[in-house]
Every structure is written in C-alpha cells, then in structure tokens.
Image 1 (cartoon, rainbow, N blue to C red):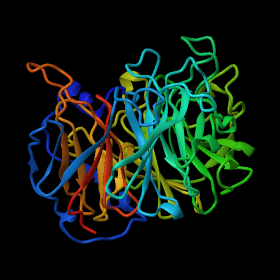
Image 2 (cartoon, rainbow, N blue to C red; image 1 turned 30 degrees about the vertical axis):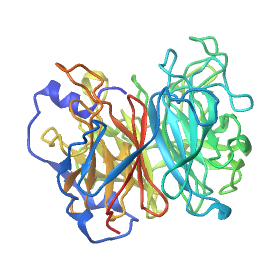
Image 3 (cartoon, one colour; image 1 turned 180 degrees about the horizontal axis):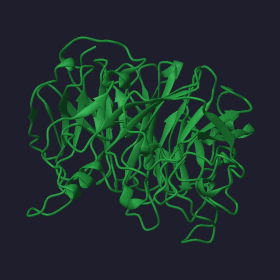
Length: 458
C-alpha cells in the first residue's frame, strides 16, 4: 500500500504520456499456453453496473462471494477487511467441480475488521491479519467460509505450492512487545485450503524473518524464491530457499533448509541496470548469516566481501517455463535507490545461473499499461494475462494479450471517497478456477471477493 507508479508519474509530471516500454514483452508469458479468440482482442467496452459494484463487458456477470463485515459462514466472526493476495485450488476427488480459495487479509493493528482468533489456528492473539478459506460449488455458491489462519500480520501476497497449499507472507518485521504483538513477525506460513487445521499456525522460520512479499516454487527442484519489499534503505533482497525436503508435500517446509540471498558481482543495486536484455552472470548465492534476524534485519547483515545486491520495491514473483520472474515496481533515487526507473521485470534462469533484465517501463509509460503488473497477475484463459491495477483514480482489472495489447476487463464502482472526490479501492488477488470458467478477484477496500463468469476464450 505504498507509493504506486501512477503516483510517481503524477509527481514527476509524466501523466498523459504515450505507451512506452522496452524489452521483450512476450517474455512475461513464458511457459503459458497459446490461445486464440476474443481474449486476444479484448471483450468489448465495459457496461456500467446498475448496482454500482463492478462494471464488466457485455455477456459477463459477477457474483459477490464475500464482503467485509458480513458474518463468516462458519459463524467464527465477521469477514475480515483488506482482502489481498489469493489463489484458487481444485476440489478434492470426492468433490469434483468445486473450487477452494485462500484469501489474504493485509490487516495491521487497528484494522476495520480483524481476522477472528480461532483456537489452533492463531499464531499471535495480538495480531489482526491472516487468511480465510472459501469452498465453492460449480456455480460459485459458497458452501463454506472459515478462518484458515489468524494472528499473523500484514498478509500481503504469497504463492501456491506444487502440492496445492498456499504460502502466505507477512510484510512486516515487528517484534514481540511492539504495538500489541506478543510474538515476532515477518514469517511465511503454510495454509492448507482443504483443512487449515492440518497446517495450523506454524511460522516457517528457516525461510527467514523479513518484509516478505511473494514467493514462487520451482516445480522441478522444490526451490522457493522469495522477494522482499523493504520500505527503507537498504532495500530488499532476492532470496532462494533450499528445503531439506524438496517437494516433500504439505508440512515439508517445516523441516528447514538453507536461506540464501542473490549477489550480482559489481551490482550492489539492481536499479543501476537500465538496458533491457542485459544479462548478468557469475552470480552467487550467499547464505544468510541469521535468517531469524535476531539482532539485525537480514538486509543489514554482513554478507562478507562483495556485499549483497539490493533493489527497491521487490514485489511480484512467479514461475514461467524454466525460469523465475520477479518485479521491482519502481526505484527512486530520492528515496535511496542508486538510480530511477518506473518498473523492471527480471528473469532468473537457475540452470544457466543468469539474471536478465527483461522489461523496463519508462517515465513515458501510459497509465493504462499496468506498469506494476507482475505484482497482481495471473494467466487468463486466452493465454494472455490478467492484471490488477493499483493507483489513483478509477481502478481496473486489465487484460494483456501476447502482442502487448491492453484492454479493460473490469472496473470497480464502490466509491470509498465522497461524491465530490470519489475514490475506489484497488483490485488484488486475481486468480482463475482450475477449469478457467471463473475469474476470482478481490477489491481491497471495501473488502469484497467477486466471481466473474462469461464467454471466456479458451
């Protein structure tokens, strides 16, 4: 919820400029299927919603699955606020056609609607974040909705595992005794979408304690890649976690492993690399001296001769083909970065041990182009991508075709401002059902989860 590319462009006077990005835009679709159809052109103009919730193209419809403040189906309390990262999982063999959702709630102290504390699922009763889990029928009727983990803080993003669990990430470094916390925070927790009690509320401490953002798992080796969205200099690091039980299934990450940070020789700050297509090699992975950050935050620790490589706003992280992609949403020299940019997408190839700057968004980028796209991104049925917008003014879900065409897929209509000065909550957590028949997306404020169905191109 920090400064966005749109806000930065506004400050620098770059609003209203034409589309400009450089690099291999098609790289963002690595490993995805190619599809043809309407989705490659868009689905037509958005039709105003008479109920004032969500505008969609003609032929599409939505269902509100859940709204903050309403009673949870489980009776455990109210639906929490600040709906953020989310993933969809297939139904169990005995319940084919169903979909399970796990939804983050990025609640800090003093949130509007905290995640209810539930015995056996609460890490710290002084913390207000966590996850909720929904089970849906084939027609998106909500069969169950319950707390999946509670007592965590600032659950922003995360990622799914090859064994169909969700890793929820705390984007904070608060310690026990600070604010209302009784335990240290800044961890990753595993959540079972089918039965959260099988995973409980156990911090995966070996994966580090820092301001986590997102993760991606190499399905071949089980290596977990992690981004850190640190808010102050020195900025975050890019990590890998080598589990002792790679691809071991639910609970296997509790067995521990080695946490390492990426060192790019001669590049202490990735913002200094400005030319798309630049390939950096001779990379090394350096063991993190103290993953629990008992006395010193990880990014401040001594990594020995050569130091370590930092980057501002490391956010989205996803696996595509045989590589992991991650984004630096922006860099500001005025805030401590070595150079300025308006968005970078990086590709790390584990086999070749190479890091490539794939795409750069410049100050002339059109505001309709989702410059921070990899932070809230998912594969669309058409083979392109769906992206959540996060900025000022109207908020959209955008579609991106493989040719780089951007089209509006949805627009939020819930005004959280005033009639004179309207504001709209950002979208987050976009994901599709395993059969690609439904798109699920959250409005962050007011916390609302939608299911969207219609003539998707397959």
